[in-house]
Image (cartoon, rainbow, N blue to C red; front, side):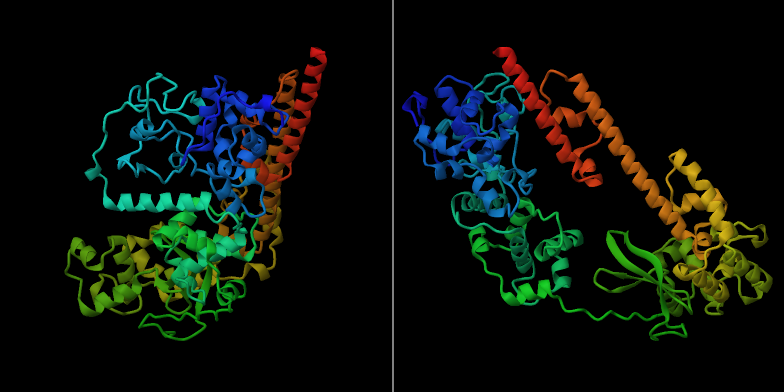
Length: 606
């Protein structure tokens, strides 16, 4: 390389300095812009601009030639890499390309956080300040400032023209008053900051020969979450992370997912909570026994649930609980995996993520209370306080037991008030598909308590359970209902009305249960899938039209990816989800267009 390409002034790279800060000082010392510095070392044919500044500290070798920069600045290439996040990306990126790595997303600041006292000591931008977890200056024991102390504006890295100088008011960032004394920073925060600072140092400057595949990284994380035990215990691990996060880690470890990114924030958080140093983690060798328990888990015998209602004839008997269609319902912050109902007493249950059974109807709880105390003479506020539930639910409990002649002396209605004729009408209406909500408002009831007395009668409950659990897959499709359903689909598609079981049932004039029981739910499902395919196709067609219009409007000029996608009204993620290869086609077309425009520009210059 020729010596004439070197700069006149060559500052030295300082300890803890970021690559962006080093190049910014270089440009200032030589009185040229940072963009000119970058374009001198660019590896692409396109000129770099301030929008590329964020890549300097994250993935420098994707935009500039570090070998050439190393030669001109007399700085070893490894030192240039170490003052960026390059070595961190290299450790965790797996098989993906550097610029596709997403595990740093949201963890890498674009707004300057700084310590004025550090600027007084050295006029450099420190790499640690870009780390989202670093919120105090360990050396001076003060919080990092998030804005200029003079004009109170936040400072984007891409707007900086000179180190320690506010680009808005041009005031010196080192000249600020003490914001917070040392004693006001809690010891726990200080300890956390020391840990994160050590982690950053280890990741960026040490263990340079370690490069982890995503499956290996996920396996190490699971091993730590499992308490470093040889046998994977899913129940114990589930208590330490969210269920969705655990599933993602397992899929990454087993290589069964395309979204194999593990975010750096999650990795460091887990290591800190479990007091594991980064260096120890990187060199950790997971035992083969644990790997085998993850990759080839023993098939756990399916847990058999039984009814636990003391008055039920099926108490403790296997095979009497029926599963209902409801699955993975989230209630009160917990996920209920499967719903069950007893075919004899009608008690409803659910299994949670720990395979524990939870009663949903409050009948067992009510039985325990009514067995110990007569509530007939209590006021409703007193009853609500005793049961711990509202009036409506207490009425259901009392009606349920009174219809079975259990604790009937505690409810104002008993067996003598039950009408066999009303019971039969109730059951027939259920079988015909009428909603219980509509039955509730029959004029014959007189009051709500009489309705509940019939609603929770053993015969009615068994009819409801039978109606819920009719196997729709084996049902013969009702031709008349199928014709009615087919007739409304074209109208729903034309009017862009979403096809769902409930909306179809409303249009036909029946309830969703009737459609299921008559074997027509699969027809609705197929038309719903067809509508979704049409909807996705319509989105892609609209995007294609918008792209064509955008290219016509920008004829004679270059097209930037950000401007193009902002014009589409559909984000890149949605397009990729609908048609994965379409984004690549858009980028290919844009690249070809810009190449042609460059050739035209060159010809005009000649």
